[in-house]
Image (cartoon, rainbow, N blue to C red; front, side, top):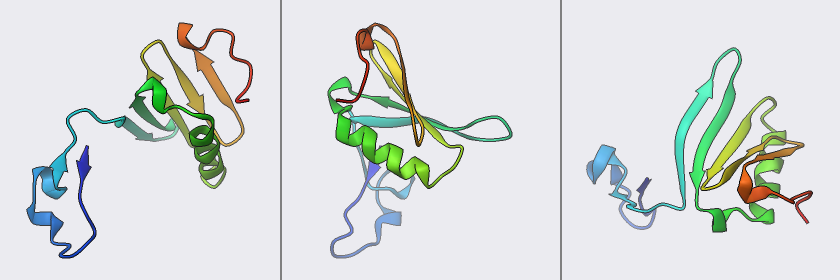
Length: 102
């Protein structure tokens, strides 16, 4: 995951790997796949389970309401969440017993 500071000199294209500055060795979120074709419009994101919180899901859903047809799949250790503008679908043992965001 690339990161850079917007403070001071913004000459970040000359720094680090692929011109994005330093690389995070253990990121909380990592975009693995990004598809936009006739049948798929989604981002697949590997995520640390503790980073998946109600506020994050609500923010992603609000953003996806502005991007009709797009979804984000959060892959976590024991399952995953498929998030769209109006639903959150889950799979895997890590989410057994879950019924709502509350």
